[in-house]
Length: 259
Ligand SMILES: C[S@@+](CC[C@H](N)C(=O)[O-])C[C@H]1O[C@@H](n2cnc3c(N)ncnc32)[C@H](O)[C@@H]1O
Image (cartoon, rainbow, N blue to C red; front, side, top):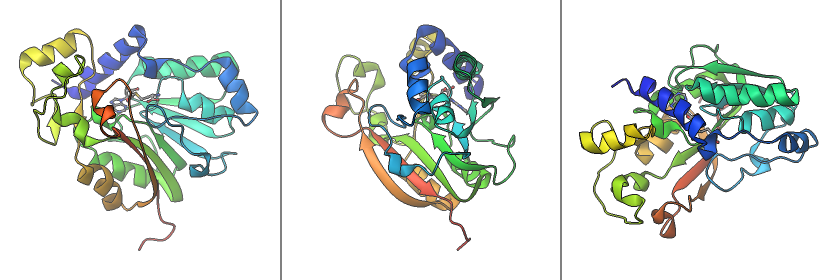
């Protein structure tokens, strides 16, 4: 299976199914953002602190795997020059829909987050990357590409899953059961049975991967970033959230001078 092709079709289908991460923001939210009142999510529930952002006026922002008509339009209305990049054309259509409806300017580019070859070195001041690298097998190229396309002093704001989420049997989670089954790194291409995978693909559920913290946080450091802030968040629908935070948001900076 080509995972990128499969997950593209799966996310296109998620738009039709009304998955919450595909529902565009309202005109009212855009109007509020225009007047300076806005918030955006990297993780399920806690808005990113405003102090994490640079001045957005004329700031070149890449919304990385951020389609769905949510963060891109809000950051555009708040004054940024936004490019939304995503693997799913239906997700990007949601951004174009909001832009057309509310008179916003933003660009959309379809592609794979591990290959940002569409952009020259040093193209952006800010990358906004909500939880989405659980849909790619290898996260290290993503961090390297982020580093390349940011300007010196540029910021990478990223949402990641806590790897602990992936050691439990996903087929039992909906019953509220936490049964330890897998080891990390986890892959739904290889670590579940064909019948279990079929149950996901029958519903057009995107297939996921669980990465280690070494790949997630260490990968950012290895790419050259300096981590400057972090918070944890939870998804109330996941029973593990009753025991520990299940998501992490990070703020990382590309140093102005190579060390
Ligand atoms: C959970 S949604 C995130 C977007 C959403 N606006 C949010 O607030 O979280 C995950 C996104 O990652 C995208 N995606 C999955 N695999 C990708 C890949 N290889 N390259 C780029 N985007 C990808 C999906 O199409 C989807 O839009």
